[in-house]
Length: 288
Ligand SMILES: *[C@@H]1O[C@H](CO)[C@@H](O)[C@H](O)[C@H]1NC(C)=O
Ligand SMILES: *[C@@H]1O[C@H](CO)[C@@H](O)[C@H](O)[C@H]1NC(C)=O
Ligand SMILES: *[C@@H]1O[C@H](CO)[C@@H](O)[C@H](O)[C@H]1NC(C)=O
Ligand SMILES: *[C@@H]1O[C@H](CO)[C@@H](O)[C@H](O)[C@H]1NC(C)=O
Ligand SMILES: *[C@@H]1O[C@H](CO)[C@@H](O)[C@H](O)[C@H]1NC(C)=O
Ligand SMILES: *[C@@H]1O[C@H](CO)[C@@H](O)[C@H](O)[C@H]1NC(C)=O
Ligand SMILES: *[C@@H]1O[C@H](CO)[C@@H](O)[C@H](O)[C@H]1NC(C)=O
Image (cartoon, rainbow, N blue to C red; front, side, top):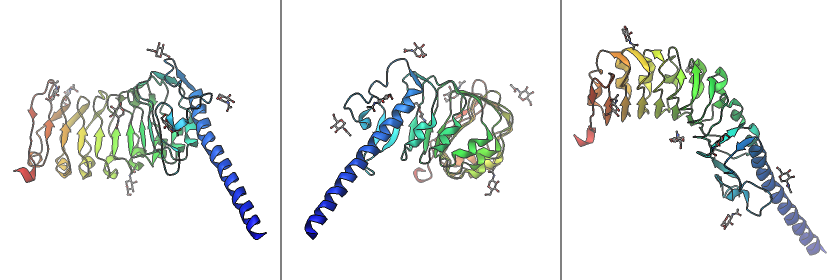
């Protein structure tokens, strides 16, 4: 009797577990379909995203799933598919989504702030689209991001102070936009930054903020072809991890701080239009 009850219990448990599995897996597929519903896909690049075939959503174009937890979407890579329409926050119903790459499409809208609802999101790549408007102060809602690429869009206006609260950022690309005004002293707080790109923003008329020199993990600093002016701050000698520095095509005066060439830079591009002076160093402390 006891054995029968136990077996019945096991049977019920396994039935309910498999029902649970089915419902949880179909709900991630449904979430992807509702994201697709707001996207214009003129090339039918997302034709595999369909509930009419037996193709599991983990095998749909651009989708990568995890093995633990089993078959949960962790990454969506839809770059270069000529997609437009709305980037819907429904995607944030995917509990383990950590990587979203929509680069090189034709999304024509402001920065989709609602993606900050994606609790696990670490990488957001929106580069090379038609994203427009200003960077709102609510950009601080993206506090969990490690990689934010907004490069090659039409983003305008000032860089907001609140950007300084994105303390987990390792890569920040805002190059090739229409940013303007003075760069605020907000980068010194972003101590994990390894790549900072503010290049090709012709209306960014600013001195180079001194606090950039506090970024001990910074490997790449790209400030070329904007309108940086004034003296190159001596504080840049604090960039002890730097391997790539590009200051070319700005309106900087004075010289590279004395201490700079002694560091481990692999390349320094300096000012001028075209490059008035161009220094390439291949110095590594251990190799000297
Ligand atoms: C890309 O999308 C636009 C707008 O939806 C459309 O007009 C154009 O034909 C598409 N290009 C290709 C190659 O599909
Ligand atoms: C399949 O997806 C369509 C569009 O999202 C939806 O209307 C339909 O109810 C779905 N069918 C099933 C069986 O889930
Ligand atoms: C994805 O497709 C491969 C190859 O057809 C198949 O072996 C695998 O089981 C599929 N994955 C899922 C989750 O259905
Ligand atoms: C974003 O995607 C573009 C297009 O593939 C790529 O070139 C770029 O390196 C990506 N950005 C980051 C930070 O990985
Ligand atoms: C930088 O960090 C300090 C100390 O944590 C904080 O007081 C300040 O408000 C931060 N600045 C920005 C721009 O986030
Ligand atoms: C560069 O700076 C000088 C001196 O401040 C100024 O006269 C000149 O207009 C600036 N050039 C550009 C292209 O901003
Ligand atoms: C400046 O120098 C860099 C490195 O050689 C080069 O890639 C870039 O095209 C140059 N810019 C101009 C305007 O010559």
